[in-house]
Figure (cartoon, rainbow, N blue to C red):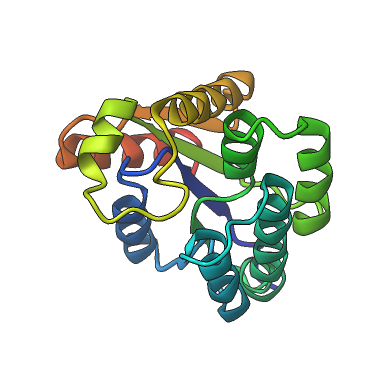
Length: 200
C-alpha cells in the first residue's frame, strides 16, 4: 500500500500570486491541483452564489456556503488523492475562512472553527505557504473586474492580511511566509526552498 500523499496549501490576499505557484508546483510534483472556492461542480455553483451578481449572502450564510464548498472538495478531491499516495496542492483552504470571514467579516472565531472542523473532518495541510503582499500591491494587481469580495474596502483587506500573518506566526512549524512582492523568479525560488526545508 502506498504512502499517503502530502497536502500543501498556498494562501494570501487577492493578487499575491497563489494560482501561479499552485500550477507550477503541482506540475513539477505531479500533484493533484485544486482550489477554493469552486474546486468541484458543487463548489463552482456555490462560488457563483457567493461572488456573483445575485443577492449578497449575509456573512454567516457566506461562511456556511464556503464550508459546504470545502466539505465537498475534501470528500471528493483531496482525501481520495491523498489516500492514493498523490500530493495535493490547493489554492486556499481553511485558513482563508479565518482570514476573510473571521478577521475580515469579524464573525466569531469559535463558530468558524466549528465549521472548519465539520468541513475538513480534521484534515489539516502539512504545509501552508503564505505569499504576503501589501494591500496596495493587491489592489494594483487585481485589475478592474472585481468579484463581490474583491470590492470590499481597504480596511477589510488590511484585517484579512493581518489575519493571515497572525495564523502564520502562531504556527511557524506548519507555515512559511514568503514576500510575494518579489520577482516571480525569486518567489518561485523561495517557494521551492521552503518546500525542501520542510522535508518534501
